[in-house]
Length: 608
Image (cartoon, rainbow, N blue to C red; front, side):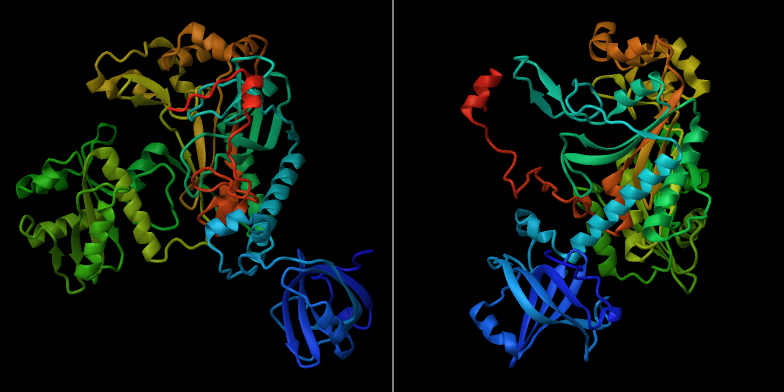
C-alpha cells in the first residue's frame, strides 16, 4: 500500500494514528537537527517532521523539489499551527521514508505565484498542472461538467455520441480535414459541431439528446478561442422557443448553485437583437451596469437618430458629426474630473487598430453646473447642455462621443463602454448576470458576393410569422444599394443566445424540419439544388420520413468555466491547450509526417 491517507485528509482527530502518505516534495526546510518537508498531492499539503534520528539518512538521501516520496509516521499536533491550510493543526512525525522517484530541478517554481511565463509553462504543462491554481480550474471544470450531466439526466436527456470523422459541410468556419487512406483523394472533416447529427437523432425519435462534446474549427485564435473546444450540445423535439428558454435557464441556474453556491433567483431578462444593438452596440451586452448608448444620429436598420440632436448638429456646422453616418455617445458617471492626460489616453485608445476610430469628442458636465467640451468652438454651452440632457447625463458625468461609419462606430462605442465599465470597477468577476437575446435577423448581406448568408447556420428556422415571407419571395437582390428594402432583410430567426456578463455562453434555435423550407433556405444562400443534395441530401431525405418539430442549444463549455472561474482566457480551464498560434508546444504539434505516410495516402505535398 503506497498510502493510507491523502495529503489533504489528516485532521486533529487523527492525532496518534500511524499513517502512510505519498506525494511530491513541495519544500524542504532544515533547522539544525530537524527537517520540515511539505508533501503535496492533488488533495492538499501535509507538513512532515523528520527528527534527529532520520537526519543522517536525509544527508545520504537528500530530498529535492518534486521528488516522489512515501513516508510512514505518527500524526501529532503542531505547536505552530497554520490556519491557511486544512491540515494546519497537525504534522506527521516521520518514522521511515522511501524516495519513490527523484526529479530534475523544475524549470519554474510549482506554486501559485510561479516564475514561469506562458510559453515555458505550456511546454512543461504536465508540471504546470501540479500547481494549485491550475488544479482549482480543472476542479471547477469537472464540477460544471458533473452538474450539467446531472441536470440533463434528471430531465430525461440521453447522452448519445456522434462521429468525429464526417463530411465537410459549410458551417461558417474552415474545417480541419483528414485524408482517407482507403479512399484515395477523399477527405473526412472534423465536426465544427454535431448539428446535423443531433437533428437526425430527433428524426430518429430520441427526443432529448445531449453531449459534452469536442468541436473543431480552423480559425484565428484569441483568448476565448481554441482550435478544439468543448460544447454542452443539446436538442429537444416537440418544443417551441419558450420550452428551450425555460429548460436551459434551469441548467445554468443549477450550475450556479452546484458550482458557486449561488441561488440565481432573478428573472432572466430578455432583449431583442435590435434593442441590444441600439442600447449597447452589440448582441451580447453586459447588463451589470448601465451607460447605455445614445443614438444622436444613426443609420442602424434605416433609422435616423434623435431629432433634437440632428438639429443641433446641423446648426453647428461641425462636419465630423454632420458628415458621419452615425454619432453615438455614452454618459460615464462621475468622471467629469478626468484630466487632459486621461482624456488624451482615451483618445489614443479609440485610435488603436483594434478599435479603428479617428478620434473622440467629450463633454464634461461639471459639478459647478457648467459644461466643457473638446468642441466648444462649434457648440455653445446651452447646446452642450441640450446634448447632455438627451444622454440623460447627470452633474459630474463625462459624455464620450464617437462618429463615423455605422458598423465600426457602433462596435467601437460598445468597446468604449466596456472599457469604462472596467475602469470604474463595474464588471466584477464575482457578480453574474444572465440575459437572453432573441429575434436575430435570419440573414446577413454579403456585400462582396451580393447575396444572403445565414447569421446562425442554414438549419435555423424563421419566426413562424415570417415563414411565408421566405417561401413567397425571391431571394435575389436586384439593387445592392437598397438591400435593406428586400423582404429577406426583415425576416427574423427563431433563434436565441444566452449571454453572461457580456459573453455569449450559449446559442441555438428552433430548426427547420420540412424539406420544402430547408430547400428554400439553401436556395436563399445561393446553393443550387445539386449542391444542396450533394452536401445535405441525407438531411433532406430524412425530413421526408416524419421529422418532428425540434430545436436546441449549444453552450460554450470552456468559456462558461472561464467566466465562473473569473478568468479572461479559456486556456486556463483546458488541461492541454494550444497556444495562440494553434500549436501544442509540449508535443510540438502540428508537425511534419513521414514520406511513407504521404505515399500511403497518395498525397503529394506542394508548399508554395
